[in-house]
Image (cartoon, rainbow, N blue to C red; front, top):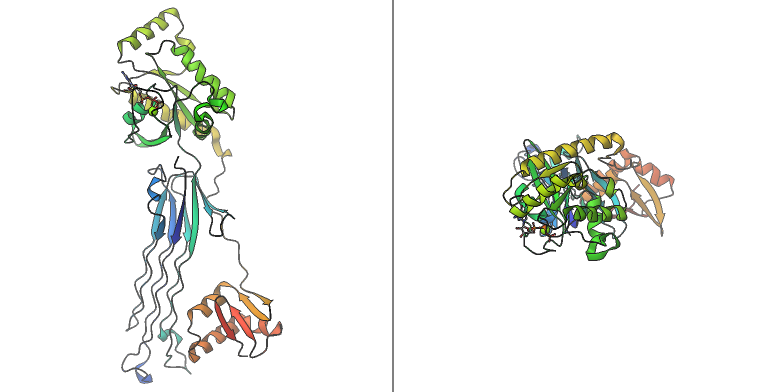
Length: 423
Ligand SMILES: Nc1nc2c(ncn2[C@@H]2O[C@H](COP(=O)(O)OP(=O)(O)OP(=O)(O)O)[C@@H](O)[C@H]2O)c(=O)[nH]1
Ligand SMILES: [Mg+2]
């Protein structure tokens, strides 16, 4: 059953800023004109009703957004990387599993159209012209682009489908899904043809819903017979049930009662879900005769309400059934009202600007801005290193470091950058 997939998402890296001078290299008169690198593309997750499964991710486990391009001479900024949109079926929970099993919920894409920026592209580095000052008119360094964010995600499809097709084996559930949608579940004249729920998007006028074709249920399913437990859990996630009764069967009333008894026994509110009874195979003469018989004997009501007569094979009545199902679904959603909370996005915790910690004699600085500058400037380059120290001073990091006891020559680590303190 495809309802969970792990993918890696990598936002685009920022392009490098470049060192360039208008005329000849290192002739101050010409002036620096190295352009900035372009920003890397973000990756956005979008809940989209048109998408009903996660199957397409199974052979595309790495999703990458475009990187920004290097800056160019004449102050030209590199091209930014394009944003990548990943469309998911509504109802997905997205967990961050970058750190192994310590999964953290990062997005709950319940509603159609909900969007979440899941990884941000790296900023482009600044070209050398941006480092020109009155005292340093010809900077010979530029800034590297910031690497794009990366994450491992586990996507779980919580809401399998709006409508579940249930019934005994061989009643025509898969045939109905084929009639309703572009899905092509296997159909055969023996029981247990369907072994895994299959989804189809059913279009009705200008709306649509997702229907799940379930494996047939049998007596004892609620106790786990025939994988019944697993299937019933899938049914639990649907909102409305279309209960298909085979009218060529000897005793349709008993068939329906058996299924309902299993729903009841399983609990979890299954028996309380709205049900539409679809009396199927009415193209068959035997089925027609049985329907008449039941009508005459007054036993028809025992099949439950609301009832619709269809032939999944010839598609007689299947459009009407889809419309009815959609209406019931709308009513059910309305009923749920606003009680269903839908946290669309969990905002990132607000970070303090920076922190300083002493670890084994090394002062470790954490903080987005400080780390970004330390990692994107070439610290072998005197000018670039001076630029970093100047920025640390303006951010207040210098003061804080010195207050915490750091002296010139002491080791300091800022993100991945290691350096000796230069007061
Ligand atoms: N005459 C007639 N036959 C039908 C109709 N619907 C389904 N069938 C036949 O009934 C048999 C079972 O159909 P499926 O759609 O595979 O039934 P299912 O409920 O999905 O069966 P399982 O997956 O095994 O639970 C096939 O031979 C179908 O051709 C119908 O409306 N009329
Ligand atoms: Mg089937």
